Length: 197
Image 1 (tube, rainbow, N blue to C red):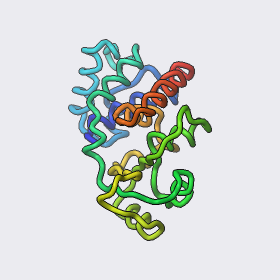
Image 2: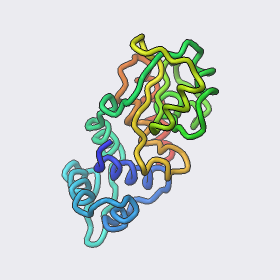
Image 3: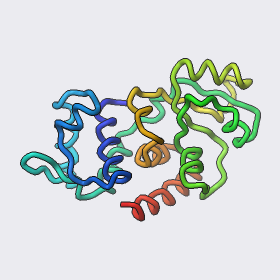
């Protein structure tokens, strides 16, 4: 995931989950440990779209949906896949067998976060480190080069700092999936975001 995307994620996390609409670029730069110029160009893009309003010493998020869809449109989930394989178990059994150091996203993240599923699904998407992949391979028999049902995305350093995966991250990851039922999840999650924001 690109560094600019960590800025989008943090902004949307603060707005959706923390209910903060007014933020400062310098504070984001310090928290995310990335240059102020990256934060500045990211915020400027959102301003050009009309998603944020730049004020004298801060900026205010005025259109969550625009910011969310902009990030979703530039997200390249496929590029972040570092491992995939097939596990001949049910989705539920695969989820139960995962080590603690992984982070669910997409369908599983939605299910665990909201205790609901808008449609059945047959793929699992997770964020994991190289050690996490080794742990998964120790626990489960994984067939490679066969239609995969487990997709491992490269875990960035900052995602582990959140108590649970941000709702915006789940949304943009779902939005980038091709399975027909991804749209069911995106539509349901969009409604939940409207309820909480």
